[in-house]
Every structure is written in structure tokens, then in C-alpha cells.
Image 1 (cartoon, rainbow, N blue to C red):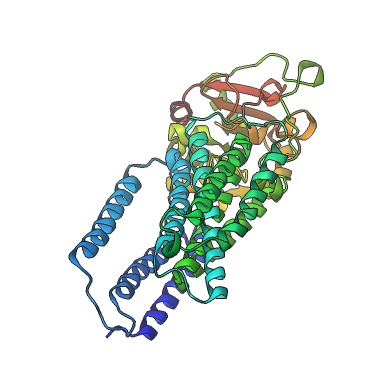
Image 2: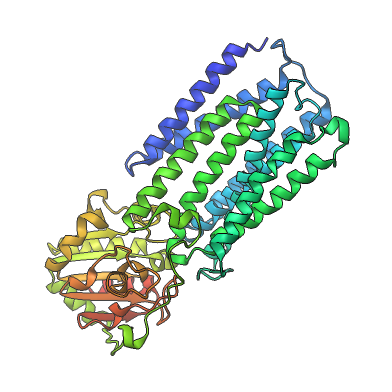
Length: 484
């Protein structure tokens, strides 16, 4: 006998493990334990769900046909294999797009659950109120899932570089979004009054309404994310994480699965809170991101007459930079996506250790949207063994740049762009940045002379206290460590 009470308790334990996982992941020191709690919770959830599926209404085990077990076993084996291979092969530079594509899977799953539930002969209650509630849950789940699916695919393409990071700002884009959103809501009315599948068949009016709404929601997801520029992509990834949680919760209502509802709500709420925190750190409204570029007014990089980058770029050799570092008493290192691409975090830590042996104060400055994923730089530095107490967020370290001798900017661009503070025509105007130009010397390590991910020129490169060190970040850091 498989007691319903035992299943409920097991779901509760899994939910607690998920909560502990979120709590652990909030700090670098406890992230390992948080991951372990999440893995245990998910394993327990899968086992209990399997037992529940194998049980009949009385709670007794009722083994289904071989085809059902074969499909379920095959799905588990294939999913576990794909997940294991991806986890082992993915580089840290590819983690943001992996997260984005995983969000798309959740959205697609919510769509498939909703459609299959509508087609199920057991999904249509004879009680009118119960039937309407179920259909509304189904409608919301499919809509949120479709937006999450296509939005995550577009985010994946932008993070990979397959799609331009520049925002696509169509004329009257907000009106278009409003029309599509209202259509999604309006179509629910005839959907609720349409004949059931048993009465009209699989492709009756109800299914047509559902598929049309799915297409509109998918189109809305594409347009919303296409309208968001590259500088906001870390926030978009966090927001899509929230969407995937709400999609999972909606699927839980459709399937009457309490654990899926709780887990989805946890993911959705935590993703929303993180997105709001990041938006506040960037001086942006969450509605700016939700509605895809709202308030950007199609900003473009400044022209020469409006204070665009102008002047001469000055370079230093590795030996010259090493000499400046030996003379310094205080050094701040600002990591960016270029460090991730070059896999230079280990070399950066080696240089930091050598500087500390010379009694140089070495700290790391992290911008909330550095990299392509929330916490991207923190994870890279932790992976390299950088002490947690030397890693500081933007708000707490910005005030220290005026008393800093040397700042090393490694592969970062938009997060150290002074145009965000004084160039009203810049797409990132109003975004708080790391004010590195206030230091006595700024050394920018870049592979080439191109603009950053957001496609914006950086006046910092022409600043009188800035010097450039061109080349692969890892090779440059290895050379600097050797020169020390």
C-alpha cells in the first residue's frame, strides 16, 4: 500500500529541501550545501511522483502496462544522460546560455502539459465551476509557458552571439505588446464556453483557441526579449528564471501536484526578487525589463558633439604594468566577461597572491550585471580560490577608487563606462557603474579595440589616467605574474 499521507509528507520534505537549497545558494560559503539539498529534494520528488503515478485511487500499487513503464523509464534515462553530459562539458563562459535554454525547456514543458491536459478525457469535470477553474489554470499555464519558451530561446541566441545584443525597438512596440496581451486574455472567454473535447473532438473550437493563444504568447515572448539590449541580459536571465517558476507552478495546478506548485512558486518568487534587486542596482525599473525596452527611447551612443569618445588611446607593455603594480599600495581588480572567455581567473588569482606577498592591498570589485549571468564573476573567482572577503560589490567599493593606486579592468566594458553617468544619449545612461576612472591609474586589458557586448563605445579608454594592455587576458595575466 502506498499511503497518501506518506506521499504528502515526502512532498513536504522535498519542499523543505528546496527552501534550504535557496538559502544555501544565497552565500558563496554555503553554495555547495545548497546544491546538495536541491539535488536530494529533486531526487525525492521524482521517486515520490513515480510512486504516486503507480498508485491507484485507493493507494495500492497498480503497475501499468509495459509501454507506460518503458516511456517513463526512457524519459528518465535520456533526461539524466543529457543533463550529466551538458553539466560536464559546459564551460563557465557557456553557463549563461545553458541556463537560458534550460528555462526554455520548463516553458515548453508547461505548454505540453496544458495541451495534453486539455485533450485528456479525465480533465473535463461535469461541475461547471470546477471546469472553468481548471480551464483558466490551463490557459494561464500555457500562456506563461509559451512566453518563457520563446523568450528564453531568444535570450539564448543573444548570449551566444547568434542574435545581436542591440535592442529591436519597433515602432509602436508597446501598443503591439498591449494588443497581443489583451488578445491572449480576450480569447479565454470563448475558450471557456467552447464545447469539450468529448463533444467536439480533439481539434474543436476550444483547441483552436488554445493553439492561437499559444502562438500569440510565443510571439510576445520573442518581441519582449528582442527589445532588450545586451547590457540588461543578466536581468533578463533572472527574469526568465522567474517566468519558468511561475510556468511550473501553473503546470502544478493543472496536474494537481502540490510539490510542483510549491517548487514553482519558490523559483518564481526568488527570481522576481533577484530581478528587482538587480534592477535597483542598475537604476532601472523592473517594468523596463518586463515590457522590453520601455523608456529607452531608442537611445544610441553619443555623437562627437555630445561628448562621444575622442582622443588618443595610450598603451603600456607588460613590463610597464608590472612596474606600476610593484609601486602600488592598493590595487582593485574588476573582472568582466573577457576574463571568463579567456579562462583567466586562475592567472588573476596567482597575480593577486604575488601582490599580497609584496604587502599590496588587493580587492575585487563586482558589478551586479558583470558577465552574462547573475553572480557569474563571483562563481569564477570562487572557482579559482579567491578569498570571499576580498570580493566586494559595487556599492561598497565605489567610494574607495579615489584612494586606489592601480585598477586592473579585465575584459569589462559597459560596467566601467563613464558615459552611463554623464551621456544622456547613451543606451545605458542612468545605470550605476564602477567609477574606476577616479583611481590614480587604470589599466584596461582587452583582446581588441571593439565595443562591449551592448555595442557602446567607452570614453574610459581615452581618459588621461587610462592605459591599455591588449591581448588575451590569460596570457597577459600570466605574463604579469611572471614579471612580478
